[in-house]
Length: 86
Image (cartoon, rainbow, N blue to C red; front, side, top):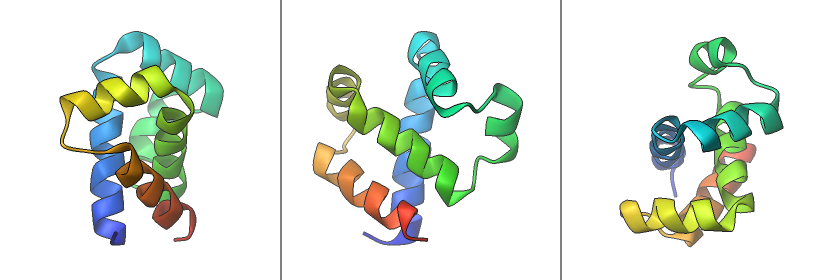
């Protein structure tokens, strides 16, 4: 997985969270990132890695995301690895 592919997948996961207010609120509470910071830091690999990590830790949410997208859980694991090593 390339860095660009990992970033694209993380942004897709963030879009999924943004369309689900409760999970988005849970993500922001867990990460300590508020809405303004999230918008400002949207392209930072560390923030995108946090998004992917949050999805990986929430199996029902991960399953729903994978079901509604072309992603597999394995793809998210690979994206997390790439993003945390940028």
